[in-house]
Image (tube, rainbow, N blue to C red; front, top):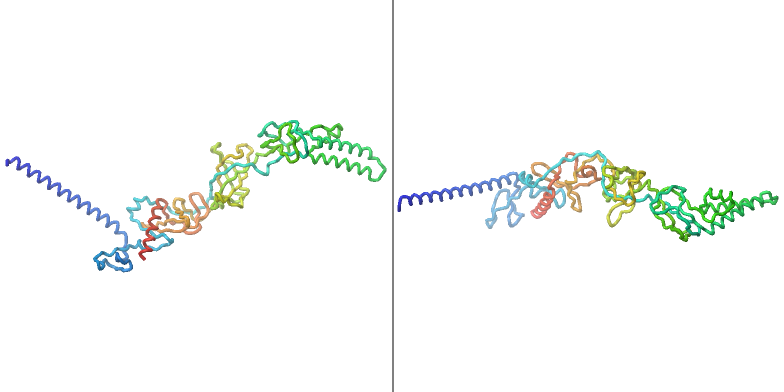
Amino acid sequence: MSARKALAIVVAALVLVAFSVTGTVLYLGRERAAGDAQAARRSWRRILYYRSPMNPSVRSPVPAKDEMGMDYVPVYEDDVADQPVPGRAAVVVSPERVAMLGLRSETIGSGSSAARLRTVGRVAIDETRREVVHAKYEGYVEKLFVSFTGETVRKGRPLAALYSPELVAAQQEYLLAQRAAGRLAGSSVTGVAAGASELAAAARQRLRYWDVGAEEIERLERTAEPRRTVTLLSPVSGVVVDKPAVEGLRVGPADRLFEITDLSRLWVLAELYEKDLASARLGAHAEITLPNLPGVALEGRVSFVSPIVRAETRTVEVRIEVDNSTGALKPDMQADVSLEGPGSAGPIVPESALIFTGERTLVFLDRGEGRFEPRELALGARVPGGYEVRQGLAAGDRVVAGANFLLDSESSLRAAISNVRR
């Protein structure tokens, strides 16, 4: 073998040895690092006792082995923690896991400002400002003075001219009674003059009952000529929202001719869930905003809260009266509603800290050093920044407000394990 080949073999052997030593060092380093990390994770947990792996009721204060040579299992303090909430146990989390899970805590503060509740509503006609116009006699519509639905009318404006044989006869009867009263006014027979006068007055009152105006009666007295048609006048000012009347239509007392509504004040009907009814006090201030008027808020007051809960939606209807003199609101528009509820001087818990289980409402208190304790709450009204706390927390307590659902899962698991081990 030449010297060159021998030298190459020696160099290759040295390289293999170097790689083997480096790999061994790296492996031992990783094993040592893993062991150090595991030791660090366990260093903050306090062992209460050791239990038999086959019989949890057999315990030992020091490490031991059972009859089969199996090591006893350590039981840590957080494994058997008390359960302040049924089905939930306190949780101890290492600082590394706190950072990894993104657990974030906030300090509970006290609220004093008035609560604001936001919901949606629908604009509706004020039912107390609706007027339906009828003819109180049989007749025919000969001429319309209102051409279309949506037209604005003022009180006393002519709506339609009606021909009614009944009304023509009533005018003639009044004229006859008036003439008779004039002829018998000087009669010496007791009661004749008074009876004639009363008959004329009754005929006049009959015309009034049929909505014949005072001006029309004065014209009839002055000219002594009955009119074939009588003008139907608007009883209120507003907007014609319905117009069944058409020219030539035969009408009677039961027929609707016009429906007129005053839209200067409207209702906004909002839906509130049962838990938010504290914000629905009579007289409570409300702000109404519309999609077509960004940045503009209309003022209103709660005037009525329905005594009935809708079974389909579990909501209660709240009525808000709003001034609409500008005409910005229109019936059946959608609106955003902000209600001013009662103020709160008690603790306020952020909504992100709450866990709704269906049976109860929970939060996790941050006790420090990685210890988190479940707490059941009794909530009040929704307020800015969260909910009012009626029972369960005090101002200054720290609660988990981020990734708390992970704590809830581990708390439930530890409670189940703790029940088994006990």
